Length: 218
Image (cartoon, rainbow, N blue to C red; front, side, top):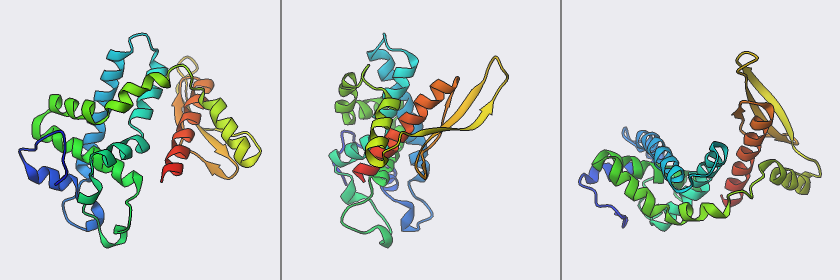
């Protein structure tokens, strides 16, 4: 079993957290991943709220998205040495497992910690295993302009700036919400909601940047 900053009382939970659905077993880590994702979001949101009392909601949301991104969680999983212990099916048995899979394993292990001991132990697990990322967010504060960053990348790669496509609109005139996706050439990135078109475009650019970062690291 991996060396973790937490000692499981129920080792069956840890074994389940390390069992990928590709194994074909009736029980796998997908439900634990679902639970761990929710627990992680709350812990990181609370920690950022506590550490940075002067930051606006939009900046906190952006920093949280970075801390819990697939790339960040895959790095944390690597630091914990989880990969050699993950059970996968024959189709995934290769030199290195995908980063997205390892990020999901981190979440499933966290879900297992939560079921084994509750919220406070889960919080301690996150603070220990994401210590560098939580301490490093100050380097990203106030310097992130996702639309500008995405434009620079798109112009460098394709010679043209990204487009922003409105996918859906909801609400009445006094309470509108917009779902917008960034598009570069033939590729459309995941969409994001905003209370104004400008806000939705900013979050759409942020989603596109996360997708491009994960692609570079995979």
